[in-house]
Image 1 (tube, rainbow, N blue to C red):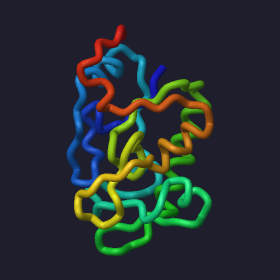
Image 2: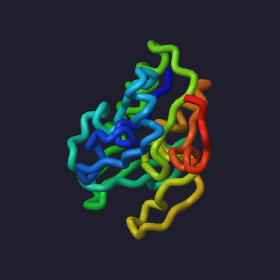
Image 3: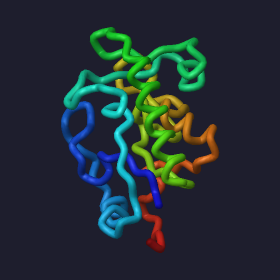
Image 4: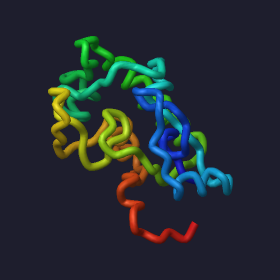
Length: 153
């Protein structure tokens, strides 16, 4: 069983109310091999919502040293941490070993996130949920790693 970012299976849960449909992820869902999550919704944020970025690092946020703010400067750190914790709880209850997450997201980014300036610049780093899952022994895979790779689903 895989944990998958809901937006990758066509759920309109992105900040802008849209999705990031990935056919390979959708196939896993259709075969009953996936549990969908949206950490931001699990944390209580609405869809659509104002874009948010990490100011600092995921590790810093989880330690209480850094924060996540929206484009209009609202602190949403608490909601992001709550969503990450809820996602981890689901993963543990369902004995999840692998998660396929949306690259670039302040929750789900596996290899990069946006730099906190809302300028579109990407930096190496992880989202809050990705970091928490990895710290708890769950393998995290970026949706971009699925491109051109033939998985034996």
